[in-house]
Image (cartoon, one colour):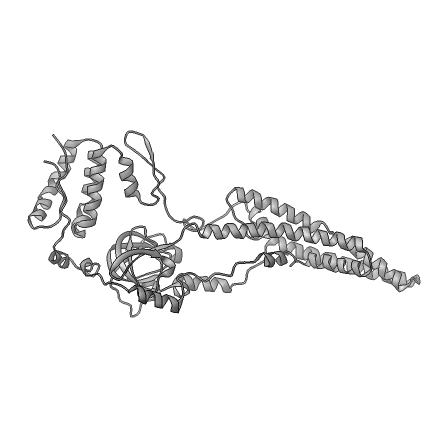
Amino acid sequence: MQNRFSALQTDRPRSHEEHYATRDRVDPGHVPPGLTTAQARARLAEVGRNVLPQSAPRSVVAVFLRQFLSPLIYILLAAAAVSLALGDLKDALFIGAVLLINGVIGTAQEHTADKATVALGKMEQPRATVIRDGVQQEIDASTLVRGDLVVLEAGSRMPADLELTYAIDLQCDESLLTGESLPVRKLSACDTSNAPGSDRQCLTFAGTVVLRGRGHGIVGATGAATQIGRIARELGRESISQPPLILRLQRFSRLIAGAVGVAVALLVLVGMLHGMALRELFMMSVGLAVSAIPEVLPVAISVALAISMRRMAKAHVIVRKMPAVESLGSCTKIATDKTGTLTMNGLVVTDIRLPDGTAVSCDVGHDLGQCTIRAAGTNEVIRDIELRLRRYFVTSEWEERKASLRQHVAIFEAIRAQDVAEAERLTRPHLARTESMAAQGLPGIAAFD
């Protein structure tokens, strides 16, 4: 017996589409044309790009000067200034060289980390599928404006806050905002009178991901005006605590300053009791203060932190500020929330195992369907079934599609296992429905003959 699939009917009558319209579904044949290119450009010039508020990048000079913001460095600078004023050029140059080496090491490491962070941010440029001038097109998500009509499908990441105008079995992952891992069902109509924004099922939010279904939405907020943008602004207002290493160095610096102050006071008191000249007492006090300060300690700390940063960089960990590496390096366990906190919250197809046990590499990223089709290779049965099922799921009515999804998967599995008899048994209950649909001029899928 020869097994094959007949051609699919993909032209659906308009009247049938309207017949199936519900609050979750509007007629895709009457999709609004969206904004014009001129309107989009004007609004973009008015409100700016669709990006989250970001701090200005640090310049090399700013990074270099930041290396001297430490009480211990202040003490060394004071000692160098006093030595220079007293004509002790040797000590002044030595302390100055120590400070310069410390600044150069810290600047080199932090500037490299800053560049790596910028490069990491450019790895995944967000894109959005919109309808402009009546044409569906893919654009840079940063150029979205209020009023744009965005097309959504499974796997799409929301480029902005949207109000849905069309939805078919649309479910979103909003764990980025709520921490809740369960999918949230979205509708194209909802009651917005009393519910807060986060509870309105017709709204989707920037940064969330479509898990299943498809739909359209009008952009209601972009950039800093989105929910995630407001969260970013609030986080920016929070004060940042100092790393433990900085706090310990500050305490150590105060301890040194206090001990040197007490020692100098005792020296001056004893010297005055013995009738020593004030100039001699001053020189002795300065010498005591300079000798008590550990000049090479900042360099030793910077070198140790630089080595640690390089080791962590080899483990693909970017540390932007050197003192933070001590905090991270001291951790023995890290308790984190869930996927998306430390990862990209997305699966990427790398290879597929075929029924015969062979592995086929895949380079199409998140598109599992495309990867499966490519993996089929010369296996025409798998290729034919996969292509036709994918086309059927896109073109047939959702009510029919929802009811027969499990059966089609079972048919596909049976054919892939080359069990034609089992595939025919599974297909018979479905043939009556598809033949009836075909008689009405509706799209269907025929099986074996």
